Image (cartoon, rainbow, N blue to C red; front, side):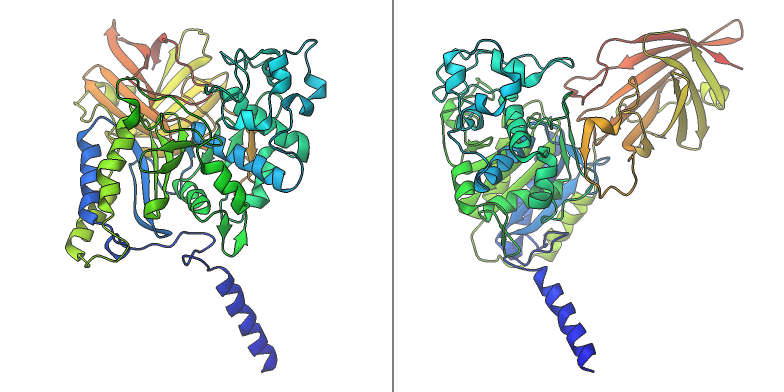
Length: 535
């Protein structure tokens, strides 16, 4: 009996250790309703309606108040279990690695950058380069007028050190991606671990973040400047960690002093659009350590095309957004106009089950629509199904396409470089596939280019692809694909079928789209291939 009681007590203690602060659970953040946290569900619905009627493509959002998720949504084909490319929001994790290394007495803010890389020093160093410190890297004030080369065959560290600053380091803000990479290189130099491996037991694992990856440069150093892939809730966890001054489930993961230092104004900044006055431009409110200050006393992780983790300490609130937005100020303005004003106070609002049901219905119906939306009837559907289209020799290695239509599904086979890859596309709807391709017009992506969390369920995870097809007229098939964890936008191709002398000829063109932003390794040059259906 004593053994049973002792075992039961251990279970209870272990269970209780999962909770602290805001009732957090290691794997998932706690959920609540907007009204219970003093937020209006109706204003959140207005936010979603404004996205529907606007021109900003949003992929996901999470709204947190008092440490709890009160609204969350994903625009199909994006979803809660899928990672998202974070672009420059990755930079804040590089800065965090530096902060942790400082706390472990491995370096200091005043250390000279050149001191970390004796093997990469050029023959001559400018005086300004000799003066540059770790803090100058963190605040984007390295003084270089233009960024150094970061080619596939370049030594990125040496290229950076060779590029002489034109301004005294620490005096002038100028956004510099390579400076963020150098932060990653410094962490690797002083810890003998990649930035990813260094953060894994210190940040990612304690937050319950699993199955993620981060791109490496040709020398095997995490990019630091971009290339980290996280789920939306992973981003929310990290934002909440910062809002809680680095404390999580009773543990101080990041020193409180560093969080305060890293999130406060350090230097005047500029960016975003120059069409609006600086006082209402969220990129003119100042820069911190690889984070931006914003309006409403906010601070944010900020990635290209609208990857945001927005902290609003005065409201104890966080907004996370992933997107493919061409106007990110408009994206920010939606947050200020609708979500900030949705916060009515610190006390709960009266429960409103009817409006909350409407909100949940709206959140469940979000979608990035494939384009075009509606197919016509084509006789080519039956005539090419189960057959192969062979192409003339080309620079893209594409040898053949195979089509097999079954109800509203097209099973597509792509043969390139003597290897066949299979994907599925839904007629006017998204269908998922797993593939080793990272682009329709590029070869497979290998994992040697990434730092990968060992928690992946399989050794070489496949890349998640969502695809849709439409017959835009009786002779034209258009396929749209989204490599949802590898790039922000869509890509695709257009097949134009013609019949001549009983033979079916095909012209394949790469589909382009306005505002599409792709991921690494994606072909963007025009492509036209000629082929023939083989009977």
